[in-house]
Image 1 (cartoon, rainbow, N blue to C red):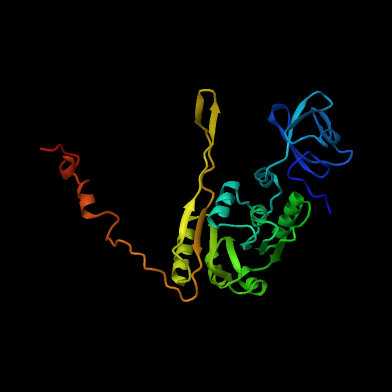
Image 2 (cartoon, rainbow, N blue to C red):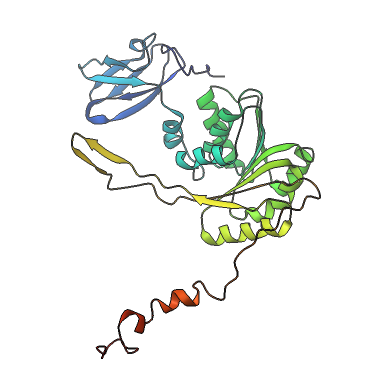
Length: 310
C-alpha cells in the first residue's frame, strides 16, 4: 500500500506535487526517497522538495526554477488516467450543490466511469459517510479504483464499488428507504428511477446527469409519471473564463459550454400527494395578441410584404 498523501503542510515523502517549470510546462510527481525528475532542462531531486512549504520555488541541476504546489482535486481529475469520460469539475461542483451531498450521507452513484465524481463525493460525505458506486464494466471499475487509490494513497473505508447493474444489485446492497442521495450518470437513467425510489429515504434526492435534450425530456416525464417525487428541476452549467491583464480585460476566446444536463427531484413520503402545479394551457406557444403584434399590417406593411404599403 502506498503512503497516504498529505493535503496540507510541508511536502513529505508520498505527497503528490505539481511542478511548473520553464515555459509553463507542468509535471506531476509523487515524492520518493532518492527520486528524481528528469527533463531536457535538467534534473530535479525530490529531496529538494521535502519539508518545503506548499507554494515553494526550487531550482534544478541546470538552474531552472520550478514552482511546487499540491495539485487541487480538479487538477488531479483532469489529468488522471481515463477508462470512460469523466464528470468535469464544473458539473461535479453543481452535483454536490444540487444534490446537497453532506457529511455523513449515504450516497449511491451509477456508473462510476473513471472515478472522477467518486472523488468529489468521497470528499463531501467525509469519514462518517458511505458511498456505493455501481459500474457495469469491470475494466472501468478497475480504472476508478486505481485513480481513487492514487489520490488517497489507499482505498477509503467509506467507499464500495459494486460491479453489476444498479436495478438488479441495489435492492440487495441497501435497505429500503435508507439512502440519502442517488446520482445517476448513464445513458438511460429512467430505467433506474423505480429502484431509486425504493432505496431513497423520504426527502432524499435523485439527480441524473445526462447529455442530450431527448434524454432530459424522457427522464423528466418518467419521474413525473411515478407520482413518487417532487416536480423535477433541470439545468445546465456553462463556465466562461476571463483574460485579465492590466486594462486588457475580456472574455477568453474559448469557454466550457455544454457538457451535460442535471435534473433533480426529491422523494415524497409514502402516500403523499403534492399540490397540483397549475400550468397555463394554450393552443400555441404564443397568444393571439402576441401574434397580432407581428402581423404585416401591424408593422405597417401589406399582407404581401414584397409590396410597399399604400
